[in-house]
Image (cartoon, rainbow, N blue to C red; front, side):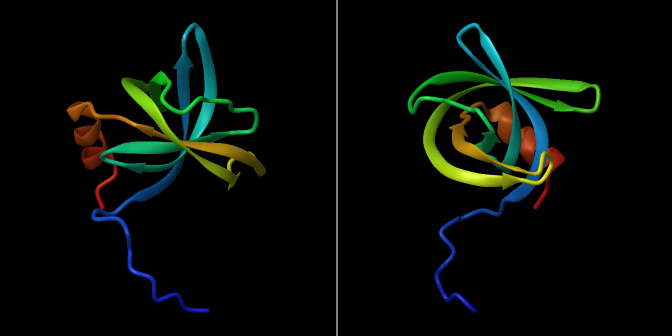
Length: 111
């Protein structure tokens, strides 16, 4: 089946499943990055519960390097099959406005 719908994104995206930690208040949760773009990332987890509008701290772990950014939960994106763990998980989009984040994305995941 072919879909002739117009692409809604103005920029490309890279799908990756990297380990990410999301800190909400005093609690830190390990989640998986599913999709990343210069404006933010989609994360997912089996028991993940985030609230729309909630401020979070996102730590991206890549090898021995950990980079932290502040973000805001903008939407819930339903469920997604996370290949890394072989299960369905709830997904959320976290908007990150920090210019360091867009530089990180463009440097690590060029499209």
